[in-house]
Length: 503
Image 1: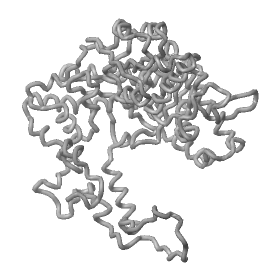
Image 2: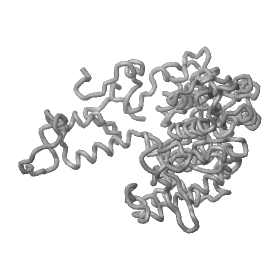
Image 3: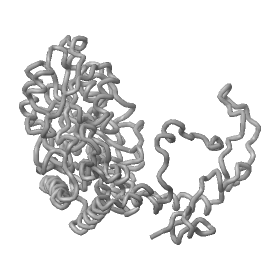
Image 4: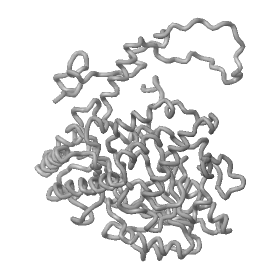
């Protein structure tokens, strides 16, 4: 294994074999030189006024080889699904097929511009229509808004649609409460609060799911909607979802479903059959488009017949052989425009490529395989790691807690950091918040049995090491990563955001 640079056997160069040390650009470049020859501009009058730069830009100058080497070396320090199993719970970090990447690079899609005339983008509109057809078929819903850029953006879209429907009923001012389970993703209450709704928390039962009687007790004439994740963030299917939907509808509210975990049920169970009114679909999770780094993402929102008239513009409209994007809300019940354009075309191409290559049976098989993989991990680890809700079948992710670490001096964070030394990205830790010391693992359907067995063996070895009292191994982890464990509290409270301010 590689030695850490602070280890006594550190090398003169800072490199350790093929693991090369890489400083910041500002440490290796010079601000007074550039790797590009640029002619001095002819005299001109700047038009920036008070916005004109008054000091040098200060960017470091590098040769082309130096620049290329810098970013290649940085890329080797970044963990990815192409490097190994990515077990983040509630995130579905699955393999991105190269077929989809190839399709997204077709010139007609890659070079399309959102401001070009619709008459010149017929193929793109047809692709969007076909993707919409697949999404509606998988969910049994009536309409889809393609423009939201990610899951949280989709939540905002769904709630704005619900607010528009309430406004049409004359209840937008009286129904200002949204019910949200305590185990929900943090974006759920954030999206509701952003629109001025009051959040009312719904407790989970001792079995990890939301019960209809708890929802019934929280309902009233002030409730606009419930936001429920199914399968939930504990990796469990909400068994009472149909009854919950019935109660919410009878009280005059709407049912928003967080679709982050759709990878467990796509092709197997349809949210529309459960009574869902709005649900976002993370194309960058369920349908295998690139995920992470802040985007690009896509979070289309499917809508029931009750909410379909209030969908945002632009939306597709077919009239016989004619297909067009409706760009303006005038003359419709749409709540208006959510974002500048139609959404992320590259993500649409990748998602449709995934759907066409799998077909309905393949999508269902992927969901079943994801659930099987998670339950395989549960079965292989349950004797050395502990589960908060008993040894019950999970969906596509399995949740453990820190009870098996009690008395060892090792924390959930220590355990996660030790996984880095073993060559694995840690699972999601300390979420959901309703479980103390949570460790949420989602293997997805991408992994072979051999890959899962190696992962299991690693976690078993770590658990047994902790229980033997080998605390030094965990307290010092990671020892073999490019950087050691930071002081995360200090980093959060005193972030260094500018070069030159490190002192």
